[in-house]
Length: 92
Image (cartoon, rainbow, N blue to C red):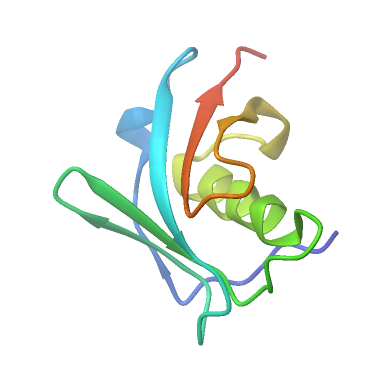
């Protein structure tokens, strides 16, 4: 899978610690890909349609880029079919 390009990518490297749980609010079918931080809320916008987990995979890839970690270090813990998702960082 190709890396999704992001128009706006917030720096979330301060959250990149093994075992950290990161909760995001997802907007599928957006006009562009972006990771935005508004206070304590992290919003991830992806252009992908929410079919068969494609949008969730793109969210994980964008989140990994914003955190500065490999995509294999991010695992979905909660919210496979929800707009509110919780990811956990694993150690590598």
